[in-house]
Image (cartoon, rainbow, N blue to C red):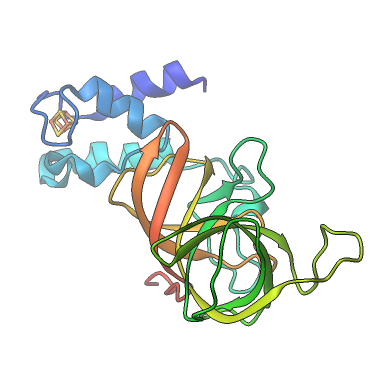
Length: 221
Ligand code: SF4
């Protein structure tokens, strides 16, 4: 089914009230978002009514991905959780951007190479600082247990444990909405560990996700 056919099919199953309660002025715009995976059915409050229960079931069947379409890349290797999407580096950058809260009092500045362990992660990380502001540092990953970018040069500052505050990158998969709590896989994550966080900004497919947590609870069964 092409995207236009899918959008039309979704539209015929919505209430058609054009009331704006979902955040879109018209059902048509909401249908477009639903068919692109950028919205959830329950954002239209009317769909919870008994008279739309059959429509809701049909919508859920229409919007489910065909078997096999879910990329293995969206599934964490450590816990097997399904991520909502992968987060890719910004164009031309080596990894997603990460914002860190270092506990170390070392003087840090852009260009420094650091070794650290993210709180909640067993892996040692190496990263390059691209920005420092008010004690927060924004970094690119440059290697796992050893530096991999510098051809034998191993100078770095060991700054111990850091709290990971945020990620910035490109969403590959359904676009989340601002305020949504998401499960995502940073493309550079060595453990293929699903992370969780809250989307605080979406510009096109570029997302900033904060409130990062590695404790991702299993969905109810
Ligand atoms: S809340 Fe439902 S009925 Fe109202 S505009 Fe959105 S999709 Fe249409």
